[in-house]
Image 1: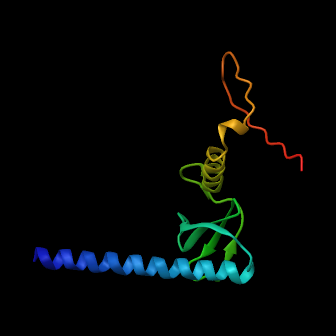
Image 2 (image 1 turned 135 degrees about the horizontal axis):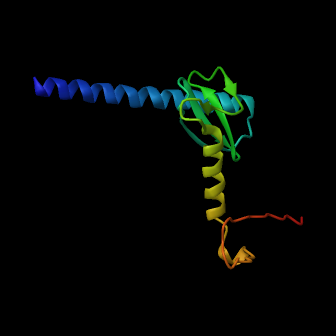
Length: 124
């Protein structure tokens, strides 16, 4: 009996992974069909049921699992009172900042740091 339950769980997990991989492929196809030169940074399952979260050149988009719909805008979790899109954008920005070498930074440390402000200047 235990082996049968274990086998059923393994089969279900395998089917779920396969379905998610198929959905991700459809999402990537849909984005490439819309913007052929698009550089997709990541595709992950979204908290928004039926959608994948796509990071495209630092922008967060939501594409339906079947690749038919693209939504660009804020996704807000009403119960938790959290902006899920902004949280993801923040993580993308933090990852980009982590990649900037310390030698390229000009820092003016405060005696008593309460907040941190980061300013980018492009002179080209």
